[in-house]
Image (cartoon, rainbow, N blue to C red; front, side, top):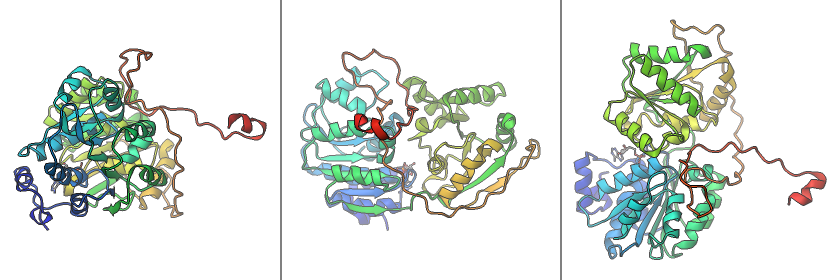
Length: 439
Ligand code: AMP
């Protein structure tokens, strides 16, 4: 199959050819005809599958049919959970529409709102946005949504995890009922299905990879190591193996800073990217990393969401993810679109139950290694694959999102917004006498 046979406009085909794409990826093969037909779509596709082009190409083509955007009006809205992903998607939209009479722009929090208001004056055929900033702009009359034709929810699972459900409900109340809605999510968990009931109408469902599987092009290993030796092991691997372009995951923002600092001290250029960094610093670190002037990018889970660097060869889990499902998301940063990639996880005695949980989720044991220069004092207990079925997660109570701020007059001004999910103590189910009161 090729892109021509999908019936795409010659100007879109030209842009694809210039980009060097010849064959549509499986999600593109499935999603493009559905979107072109005008139907709603629910697509289970992880990042790295080519899902962005999967919705962007047919969306652009559908937009060619109507009239261009009026002043301040938006015709297609793509919502993403993170600023980095918004920028990434917007870059893709701009690339694929470069030969089309389509205006696109992007808005997200953490940067000045005025330039975004100005950009929106002439309207946008495609607007890529994070939910909080979109609502801010709407409240300030910078955009109109009453003529919206297409709504795309990208990485919907992540939007729910990050507590955007309230914002999403508000947004959907502002847009026409008669529209095309496309929902992309890594999985079709119950909360996603509930979201779909509210947002999507009689959708076609497509799915390209079962949940929690890693791409076959990614190899992965575990290094057993003692905690105090983790940084030394990282430096050793980067230097000995000559690794260039390494994405390192840290559990905490503080840890990310510390790792970047230690690497820099050993002449390995490194930058940290997390929610306490200003948006400008995050954008710069990512750009430097992409350009190759920064060799190692140390990130927390949320900040790394949306990082798409083609042919990123190495991902290191300096700390294992707290949520086992995030393992697949993390290592999905490498081996994208058919490229090969290698993921390495450092596992200490403390992390062994997290390793077991990951192996259970991915349904395979990960090969273990010991670096002779840094042998652990004690070998870790062997893994035994737990094959009991995993219960689907209960829908989470929505949290107040931290990525974006709504600019209500009462709100404290301009503190830069963290993007890490808040650690709110879990509310206990009310029991006995208190139950009535709590309800
Ligand atoms: P995505 O899942 O949308 O983040 O895309 C993952 C990567 O695959 C991006 O770097 C895209 O530029 C690339 N990509 C998307 N579609 C294709 C294609 N048909 N052929 C080759 N690469 C692609």
